[in-house]
Length: 109
Image (cartoon, rainbow, N blue to C red):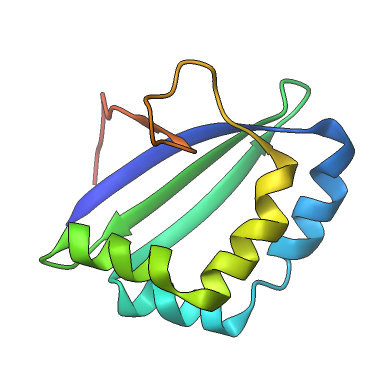
């Protein structure tokens, strides 16, 4: 199992829309995540800084292929077109990143 923490900004004027979208994530998007071995996926909002923190666990054996399958999924692409304008990627992210990955510094079971 591989865990992933990531962060991105959110536009204050889109917080209500982002909450609404995530209160009813499309079944096809959730199915694609499950088929790509993503589990325990959570997104947290921090106000007033307007940051989103995402956490998920990967339980597969071919991370690159599973991430490619998510990215190629038409329903997921439509979902991203709705969510993307709500988000503000961090200036410090690396080329090609949208959400900026974080490094784990502590874990306890």
